[in-house]
Image (cartoon, rainbow, N blue to C red; front, side):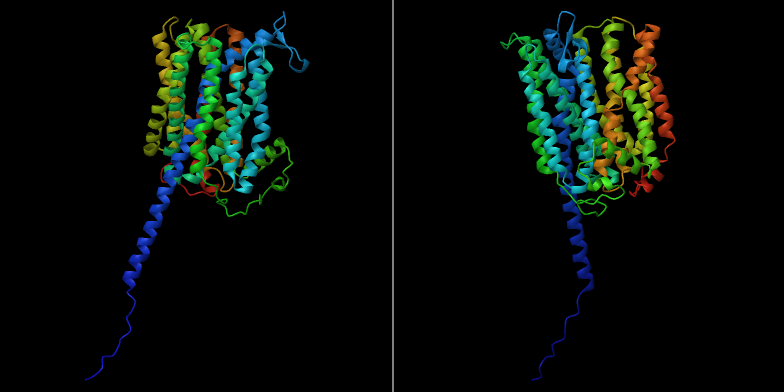
Length: 479
């Protein structure tokens, strides 16, 4: 019998190719699942911290801290922090201003440290829990403890600014370019939804405090502290899901090109900010967008801060109506953020932002003609603000994220956050000067149209596709 000859088996190239393709698909699918999980965790930081902005800053703390300062005031109405005479009615505003100065000093340092080390999450945790602890401590703000209130406000407000800068800087890392508008919009929607939910609960306690067996003062202190507890509790979710990663530019932790301050941890905040601005001059189109954002965002922040004064002084509306309008803005801002995020998929972020600036202008023009003593029309105005508020802010954040050079996300977002929180002074100044010269809040509110008009022109002139390419980022199909 003849023996069979063993023939070596030739590798099946098609089979190997199929295995390789399947492995790539599995890896891509796993990466997509991980990215979605990280994005959902990212949304929850907005859910956690937005209640501070809504319940504490917008509604409760200003009037309450002012009343505490008034209780400590001398017969002439002055308090004397560190021996400096300050009108009790101005103490809250001065405390907010001081918190902005602290944030401006700290944010550039923290942003540069985050980019150098690649460890954003511990810094985010430190900032978030510093702010949450200070907010929770506002429960002990009673009697004439106005200095305690001012200190807690400065700490909480500055910590929130630092934490938001770090939170925003995650966006380019957790979302590819084509997803960024939608992810940013969902984050804003989560924040406004949480703000509305907690504000409803706080208003129930505040308005029906006798039914709960607590005084009005105690109810306010519980509302303030509850925002801090909420902030701290829900921050656990993003801290579990977000992950630190090496710089997308391939730098090793500790390297920070283009500035010697990367090797000088003792550099002051202003020096680090100056270094960041100098580096941004290498990307003039990014700087041009930031200038446009600074202008129209100044208008947005002024409308938000002055709308209640317009409603109470010019339209003669009561506090319940004004609080109800704030709540309506929070609710509709959720829908507005998601709606404008969808529009950006079709028309691009830049065009959608430009459209929102037109809508802001129309809303202000309508507000100029609102009849006094007509709360229904004021609610209509609030609805218009709510629908464009969240979307214009969310898309501005996502558009800026495309213009940030890889590896410098936190550093550049510190400049973005400073322009968001630290530079919004010109609008209130124009509002106040217009009222002083004309004696009319209607003239003051319509004067803010200038910010949206100038911002529109500046943004329209920015060639965003070229700006994205110059920053070294991939250009999305639609922007």
